[in-house]
Image: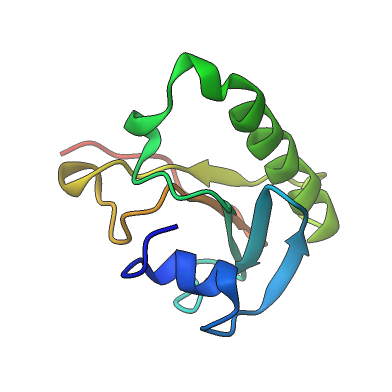
Length: 116
């Protein structure tokens, strides 16, 4: 746990969040700046700064995290129509909070990824 990390503060309960799902390893909550009608974040409770910090020893935790993303999408009612998952990694990848998190975007058709 990082004392300065926004998401670690949400995990600890120091900052409130619109919780959707929680277990001993994972927390899911609504994004405060939604980009689609359904926009949730799923995070590991253990502080990992980015996807790039995962190690081979984290495979079980990473698998649980991904499986819970699918579970949360079903709970939010977007699984049947489809949804986008996004993991931004570090500055050039658009990561704004230095804690691994997976975005679930749904509730409408999400446009194609466009490179410029």
